[in-house]
Length: 222
Image (cartoon, rainbow, N blue to C red):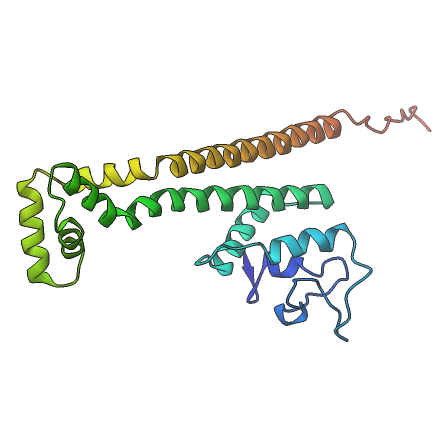
């Protein structure tokens, strides 16, 4: 949620001190600093969790703005009221972000090795000489050479689906590892959500069972 040009996650950093330091107030190792540029040695658990949300470990090509948008959505859903709720936001954001990272990698790896996969398919049917050159033309930028390569490959009965399948097979061990990593993050996400919901129900039950103030009977004529 954005208010006055400031995201929820940005407002959160510095909540322990009551002020919102800008991104320029953090040094290269993401340790919060004060205005004098010294390390904040009085940071408590809140500022540590805030730093995790403000400066996550991103892989190449990932956008910090996208991550902070996720933080804002999770924050809005959880509405944290204390440190442990804020920790839930941090853990859930990291689990969701990493799950999507592994999902993208699982899709990107076979796509990046399709030329090698096509060359392997050509070799497997006896077209050893020129297999790599034909695969290079098939995925190349020269329209004329690409058209010729596509026609030749199709004559061998090799389709894009077959190329994709070979690329997946070539990277099966890595794809399987990514599948396990995704499952791990999904389980982590479900555990966090279940624990949060359990705590919410417990809090609601506790509020509902609080004794009401006794009613004082007033005798007539008093």
